[in-house]
Length: 271
Image (cartoon, rainbow, N blue to C red):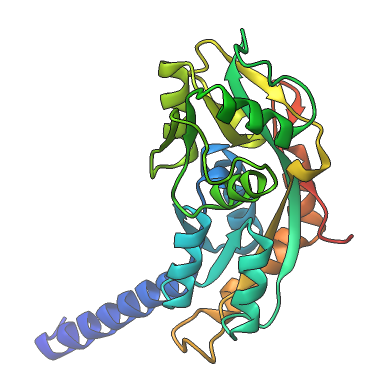
């Protein structure tokens, strides 16, 4: 092969390689989400199914919901998938997404030592938290502006002890898994989402003590970040993720994710 032909072929192959690389890069999105969706194992289960259906890679950045929303506000994510409805609706109202779609739900549970020294067991989360405060029992708060932390603060406001949560109240500023680890090592109480609890291995002497209160309902929403606010957002790919996770295939995948035969999340996008 003549030198100039070899150079031309090399140039063509190099250009093709660059185009392939650019195409591969385009077929990926960033989803800002909560620690509960990651630490429950849900995304590890869902994302391979999504890639099989669309060819799109998803990088999940798992943070507390407040931090995930801040990330999406900065335009550092293409999709937001979190669980604090009030904050999500404000995100939409402020123009950072055109709409919020409900995806799935589960519930929060109060976790604590099986012996339950302050007698919280039952189905009344507010009464249980009053007892924790009155007894100065150790309570591990996420303290990280997550959806779980926001729910916990709502429950405290429903008590008459909001200003005095007891001397055992501690904020860890951490994710759900680490908060559960702290409670397991210290015998403390902690509010958790059921999905992370079911996937949590280091339970020690902990057990579910309060469940079944309708106030413990935990709804998740998904939003495509607005390209009008952030032109770099991968709108087409991000919309494919939103459509899939709220569509029949994604909803069926969510329903089929179980640990020990127990379903972790319940799809409700169509409701």
